[in-house]
Image 1 (tube, rainbow, N blue to C red):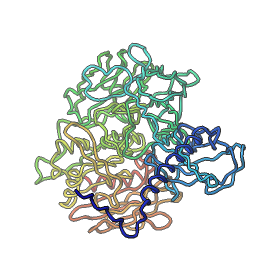
Image 2: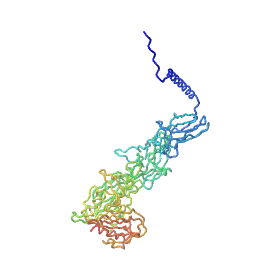
Image 3: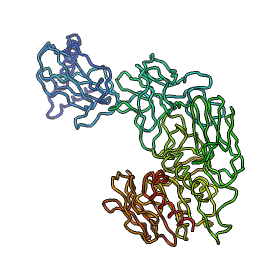
Image 4: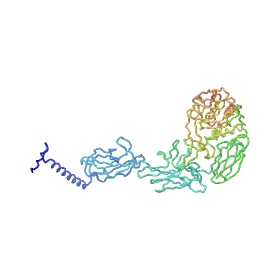
Length: 625
């Protein structure tokens, strides 16, 4: 058998090349192994490397930058980069900078990327490149960029009262005399508790910050200031503050960096349930008029103490129409019979007194028997505005719920302070006293009654809106406009009135308050209430509006000027300021008439200013004829 023929070598390939390549690969592998072993046992070229484990570039002056600190074993040209957790570079801190050997060097990163944007929270590493050694070292120890404050929340203050289906504020003094126990969640450290008063015009810190132990979740407040004095009646919020390891400060309620006070934002309640209300007496009258002789219900919170009460007519004799004493929180009293009147219900307990409006409608109405023979005047009290500006905390968040702040409010809540609504002593009080003193007959209602059980306005000649009616439901506004278009007269004595709407829910809440519109309910464009130093003078009078007086009105330091005529109306009377801007204005609209005084606190001048009284009598004639 013949031997196999030898395979001829491929063309162009030396016979021993594969063996040589294999030998070189083995040699390089062994060389790399020995180099790696040498490098492994050589001292690190970057020595004494230190860095912060976490930082928070939020501008609060604490841990705002990540700082690294190291020295080189040999002088080199160094490039330092920040890598994200995927290993991608986000910022070059140093580019080929020459650094000497054995000199401690410091660098910092402000949390910005190369394009100036804020890097997202997360883990990062440093990469140090040594050009002369031809090496890059990625530090194995990462650090954290963290700008998220710890979530701090006040969970509750005291046990929820039995039957309370919604959050409510803690009331001090407690019936049992115990302090308010504040329960909170604070995952950080260096926790503090601070109490702020939040009533409009009284925003201030009253106690604290009180240091609390790490891990604490309860704190008690006895209702005293930092000096130990009893805190004034009002609305308060407890703010818990803590700091995490990155230096981020978490607060249960946002605080201003400039003032350190709670930040109040339009339409936004406070977070959590840190609200405490200090009051020794609270009175809640009905939101609608009570018919004379009928039984009316009033809620009285006297902190379980006995109280004395009396009912007196506004502007009437000092002797009380009704009086008595009680301890029950439910006061039932018979409304005085006779003509329609506005009364003040006075309640005394715990060394304080409150007076609240109590409207009473006569059983005999002045309105005509039908819309075929209208006569008489309907006086409307702005209860929605009273409650909308009543600084009471409904939901226990520590912020007074006010329509002015864009927050919903409940109609059924006690009046704050002395009980009298904002502006009552300058508007509704003196007006009702004047009407009674001059024996003017009228029917009495409230805007709440107009919205819930409206009377037939066609039975009246005129509607007198007493005081500042800032908010009205849309349906009530449409009814008043239709009333004027059909031939009725509306007189508005307030300022900032009839320019906002609100929704009255079936559960008695005022929601969705709007900011002031460009025009009022009847189309007039009004300037904001502004200062005035000169008399308001009659400049036009086609309807004898200023008959009986000089037509000159002095002593009104604030007025509301008209800057645009009523849409579709005709100006028939006006009194202007020194610049010629109308203030007192009467316009026809359809078949009817609209009169606005534009004088802030007009009713408070009725008792001593004969020109104001003459104007009131003239407006009353327009209303009642």
